Length: 200
Length: 200
Image 1 (cartoon, chains in turn orange, blue):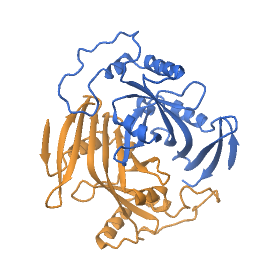
Image 2: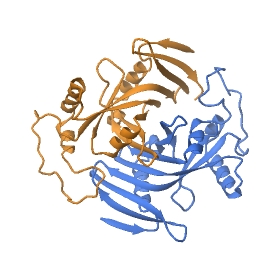
Image 3: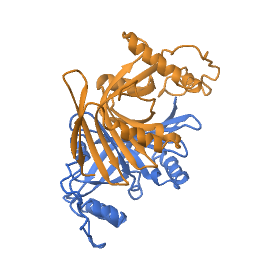
Image 4: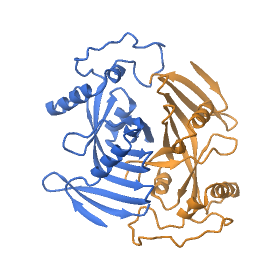
């Protein structure tokens, strides 16, 4: 089985998995692998913040002070591993990651960042006022006094990551089926996707 | 908070997390990141096959024909990201990976591989008789006729991976506490661990 298409043919599969696992809070969590500044793999759980409007790019919020930012600046590629614990489906989504922080020069990207900020909960916004992630604790009760006006825009530490999928490896452990979706750029700047059934 | 110790101080935390999440089949699953042969991060779900006897090394079974073997041969480092969905705990375990396949010259390692083979279920053993993972499907009903004597030893495709932890980043999302465990080799060939409370 193989085919070619301009819209991302794996997206309906992913939307269906999200829907059938939506009763589980952790179904919005996936693992993002990058290459660390020491040249070794790095891997952490992050939260799916939706697709970029009308496309298949995946949004992640992060703290600009976290080490994954340094990782991505050195090597702008990542692989998401997203395992759905109820439907036994795995999506490995590989692609280039764009970092959008407050100093981005593109007004459209700054707008996307602002939108992502207001889409996140007041509680998760407060995290970005806390001390630098990964540094030793010096104050046992940090940021307890921090407050944020709900209408205030993104703080400096807030960063939007956008992963642009280039390859998606889909595995269904119930049916024991695996599909490999690969893309190539087409003449008009869009991507053309092909897919193939491969051995699990 | 910081301390130094010869036994791995993160292991009791991990054993406790395994215990408190043991009602969930997927609590034995974690994501293993490696560096792919294209130099980009690779990430996939694998199954925890226990610790190596009397130590803190982590065992994973895999097919010698899977692409992660090529990855690890080129760059023998990996990072496990293990998120426990019930207790909201994350362990990021980084270390060097040893590949033990049937042609290993160390009789002790071959014994470990044999032990891992017999510890796995007859159904999972059959997988190693299937077609090469990741290659296009050419036979829609592969290996349906495969059978294995339950007393037969490991087949050629069966491979044991052993990850030797060098650093463990522990995050508890309920208490919002994070601990960084780092090791260094000591004079007697063992590891000495130190740990420190860091900002989440």
